[in-house]
Image (cartoon, rainbow, N blue to C red; front, side, top):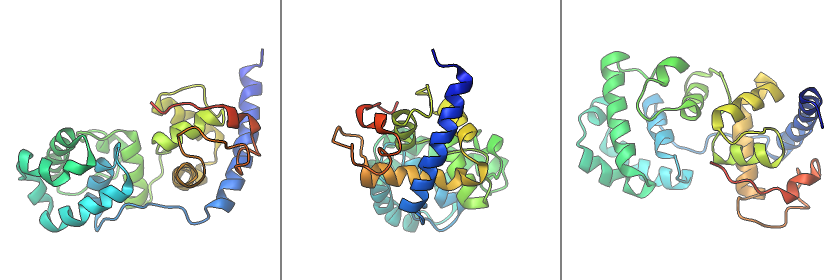
Length: 224
């Protein structure tokens, strides 16, 4: 039976090879969501849960024109806001959390989106994935790796983790990849999932990263 030390060594070696290939494949990977300020960034990321970036951008193109200030969100009516974001899915919870987050930012954080992980995690509907995306794009602060469904699936498909829990996957990836790569790693993994190796079963034996780790062609984990 392989030891944890040997497993970690093999994963670190694999991670370096995967990273080298990813940087060549997607040298300019980055945020696809559109926004005008840090609050709009937070709103867009919250709306993106279980929704495509394309759909979010369609919704926010109208939303950001209708609600132009933090006060406008804080004073929004739940039912009306639900209609405005309906097509992003899970609209009731998203509306409730965005309105509550606007009120908390106004009352507790002086009207500015927090720039600390601990404070961002106080906001309704904000977990580490959202916080990592906001911190990195708004303030250039990198405290971790944003683990969305693409990242979860990639980490398990390429045997970079033994877990399905996003927080534990994040911890494993942080150990395997250099900190200077964390911010863009998420976007590179997302692009790989979108452009090359989607979640549905298919023949991926000839994909560029499957050549690095052939076992991945036979492993089809589902993101939790």
